[in-house]
Length: 377
Image (cartoon, rainbow, N blue to C red; front, side, top):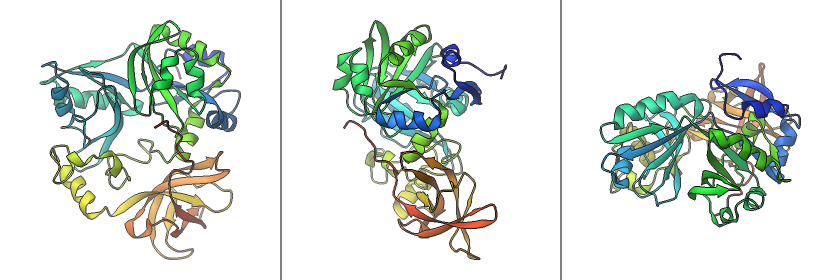
């Protein structure tokens, strides 16, 4: 653990009794004394505070100074509509490669004269190198090394945070606000969340991170939540984890992320294509992909974990897919999973079998999310 990076909140996690584990090169809290199950259920019922400071925060500014130029530059790397993103709004996106594979998924925010980008911890060095190589002729790329990132998630997140700054209650899903005063601490704020619950992401200077975390944890609704519950929450929310459910071997269409590719970037759109792998991705949008990410509901109580092979028959038959994420869903009260299956087996209610330790167990293709999203629209 000695060669791992630490976030600005590391000592606070230890003080709170967290079990620390290596994750994406950082020492991170996997759980606190409350335990993963109770942390998960607390986030669903009230509000949980997550340290996501290991993620990368980057500011992109066009050398011309115009948002239009930085947006069009970013559109050369992602298949989403960046130019049409309204000021003080954010959007989910993904970097793609020449074969249509996903290099990373990320969040983009229009902060008026620049783009604010948040990328995954495990990919951030590669993502930053990609942006510098592809965009440096047109854009200034600033990596925010001195900032932490906190996520406050759950149905009571608004009520809790609004006691420190009432204006946050006016924000809607995917809104962004900058220079917000949270009880004397200036932050950049967004309202989204990777738990399926309503909530906020708070970018704050490292020097203020512990003070802000303590203010939030002092609120009666809020408990600290670790990576364990973060994973089970996002799985119940049907949300992808990079390196597991999406990677360079999966296209956005296979990953059922079609919704993230706006009409303007599709065939016959005003700015169709122009991103890496556009030929593959646009063809799959038009004709369908050979396989698809689906929700999977195992029968019984035994979870089906990542890597479990999926078959079309209880005996014999063909291998038609693989589980990419699986575990026990505390809110669902049973095992949940997602994975990729061939297109002809992707229809909801299709019966399939997962092979666990040489034994095939039944599961059913099901709709996602497993727990309905609770965002404030």
